[in-house]
Length: 343
Image (cartoon, rainbow, N blue to C red; front, side, top):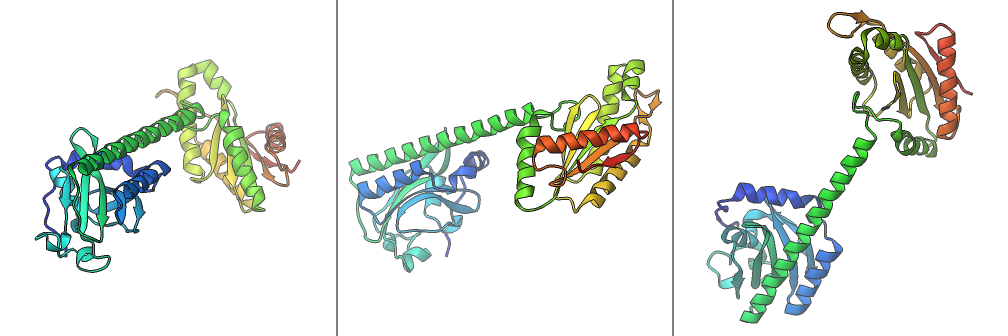
């Protein structure tokens, strides 16, 4: 049986604060775990915990003593603390008019005592509680209540610190991604070669799988830049990126090597046939003219070199040298074609 508890007036803002910590708040951290263990020891209770309450559920951020599981918000005593934003102490749950029929009071573990303090993550935004429970009725002295409230203050500080660390890690990841991204096409740039492609190549070889590579060079692109200017050239490159993106799979890695050259790395292709099929689709896509500036249609077809590891090399350097040879062979044989080499 649940309880009828109104939501706080600032529930929308409160839930935004909850969502800002749930990525790391659900899993117990060493610091929060230590806090709950200390709380259980200080108050000598059956259990101490940090709970986070969202729109539907009570999530256990950490706990010490008797283990509990996440539960529905409407059967959680902590919901009352969230709503009132005040400390709640119930000496004996079994005689409380609103709480005596809760399932964990009427039956196992037959809780009797509850004390919960609101955890205020930001001003006026209570995201959860620091609470202690016991299977025996008991009272807290004024000093013990003050101590319990200090535990909630510490819990809030730890949650804010974790949120800050999480935000910083996202920002750091964004910076790393930006450093490896070509701003014109949105593809990875050369900096991603060693870091990203080496990881994928090693993973494929470790699993005894093939790993394909293609080098693409846009034939005639220099003439577009020379005659129509770099702005038109950039427009053509952006359209080229769209055509490549529409042709490759989501898991394929595309890198703008520089200028009008692109590299595509294909994790676990079936074999040379599949690599050739992808190259053929790219050749067809680039045979259509490009609108360079709204006035001029220009042609920039592809020469493509390809190779497959491990046959063409078991390390990135060897694989790239083989693909480069294949690209130059495609150019030497007349361009607008695909050549695959093994060495």
